[in-house]
Image (tube, rainbow, N blue to C red):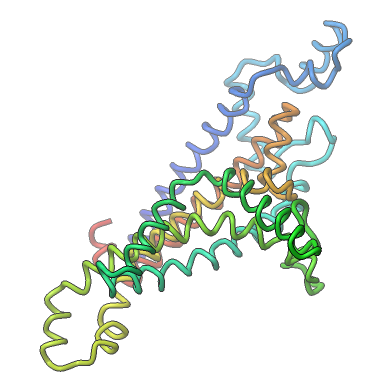
Length: 324
């Protein structure tokens, strides 16, 4: 196990180097000139050149990359061009809302496990067909389209039908992860974005869980257990469930990257403060340090989540350690 952990940590270092390169490239891929944007439309060429020098944008790319990595090693993500505020501080302020949204979406996502098992145990029945078809339809809907639909149905139409604004369309209340207990308004602003983000993952997980469960219940040891007279409920709970759910839990952990990407779109659609909305607004403002910091944060969350999933899987299944 120790050898496997060391090997994965070495791979992690290589991945992190790649992340810095990709993040740096993204900064230059965004169209526009940040110096021009900071100087204003009526700025003179001299003023723009001065700002470009102050930002270090007049240096060769390899020098800019060297300085970029050097700041990262020191924990310095730079300062926002637009707000004149440390990027790290902005991430610390916005991360709790994004983490809150991701955690809520993961909890909703886990509903796909019992739905997939139920569907597998009733293969070819009406409920199996209905659940599978619904999952495939929802799985194919872009997250921003689903978000707009949720706003229309539960934000606008529900208010028309009931006369109450049950689910606010935009914004975020007090942080549910904070010290002060969250009020209903805080939870209300979280429900629609979390359901939007989690529902697509429920469809995906339920479909994968169904396939995994069908494979397990056809295995020889399941047939042996049934031949010995073990009840169907005991066969499912004691023999089939554990083996069928491990691959899906691994997929769910790796799928955190999709949640982070979906959070950017979800926070934008619902105008919800968080890392996603911060990145979106920074792209529009050509605020390169904020874009780089936000992308780096989201990528690191994804990379470390995958690392913990791999280590957990290796701990549960020793064959992974030998193969890896």
